[in-house]
Image 1 (tube, rainbow, N blue to C red):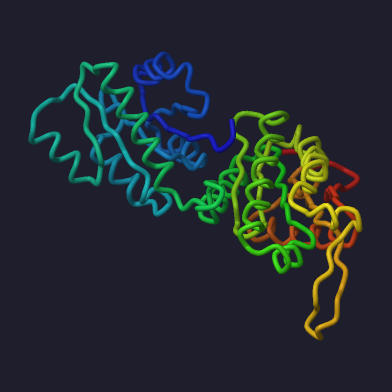
Image 2 (cartoon, one colour):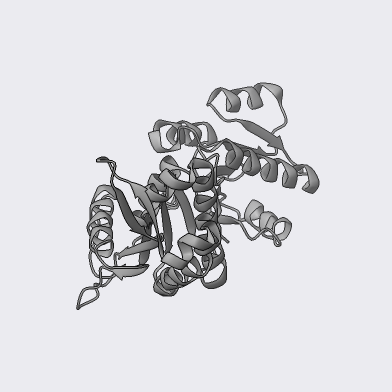
Amino acid sequence: MINTSYVVIIDDTSEVFELVKKLFVSEKNIKFIQTSSKKEKVKNALQERPDLIIVNSDDLEIDVLKLCEQLRKNDDNDIIPIIVVGENREADYRLKILRKEVEYYIPKPLHEGFFYYTVKNISRLISSNRCISALTGLPGNIQIESELKRRIASKKTYAVLYTDLDNFKAYNDKYGFMNGDEVIKFTSNIIQECIQDYGKQGDFLGHVGGDDFVAILDYENASKIGRAITKKFDEGITQYYSVEDIQRNGIKIANRKGKLEKFPLMSITVAMVSNRYRKYNSTLEIGEEGASVKKKGKTIKGSTFLENRRKTPIKH
C-alpha cells in the first residue's frame, strides 16, 4: 500500500504486539514494529519515524515514567501521539502518566474493540491532520522530508522518483488553471496506479506542489514504476487537449513579445535516484542529485525516464 502508517510498540512481553497482529490482520496500510524497552532498541525502532507509539507499561525493564520522558525529550518524537497500556488502574498513577505528555492511558484488561478503534481512529486522525495537498490529498513537504530521513536511517536500498511535467506552463496559459489542476490530478492518479500495480507495501507518494511529485520506493521495482508512469501519461494526456491541438501536435500561444510560439504537447520527466550506487547522508544530497538527473531528463524530447545509474552498486 502507498503511504503506510508506522506504529512502534515498546513491549518487553510481546503481549500487545501479539494482540495488534490479531486485531489488525486485515489492515494493510498500518505496519507495527515491536521493540524492547532497552535504550538502543527503542532508538533503532524510532528511526522508522512512527506515526504512533504504544507502550506496554507492565514488566518493563525501565520505569515507564522515565521512558516517556526520554521519548518526549527527542524533538523528532514531539508530535507523535503516545498510548500507554497497563494493569494499574489507580487515578493518581494514570495522572502521572498523562503529565509526561502522554495522550492516552488505557487500563487492562484490554477490551479488544475499544483498543482496536482507539488505535485505528488515532491513525485516521493523524492522516487527516497531516500537511496534505488540497488538490491531490497526498502528503506534502513535511511528510516527504520525514520519509526520506526514515529511508536514510534504515540502511536499506531505496529509490526516489522525481516527476515533473514538461510544457505545463504553456498549457496553463492557454487552457487556464482549472484545466491545469485537472492535469495535476490526472498525473497524481496515474503515479498512484503504477505504484499500486508494481510497488510494495510501504511505498510512499508525496506532492511537493504544482506539477512536482516525489515517490519514495523499494529499489527493486522503482525502474518499472518509472517507465510505467511515462507510458500511462502519454496514453492519457491527449484527453486534455482540443482536437485541433492534437492534430498539430502542440499549442500556439503568444510569448512575451506578443508573437505566436508553438509548444509541444505536455510530456513527463521521471528522474530516479537511489542509494544503490551512492550513499546519501542527508535529504539535501538526495534533492540535489534528483534535481541534476531531472535537469538532464528535461533536455530529452518527449516523456523520459532517467536513472542515476553507476557502474558498481554499493553494499548496505
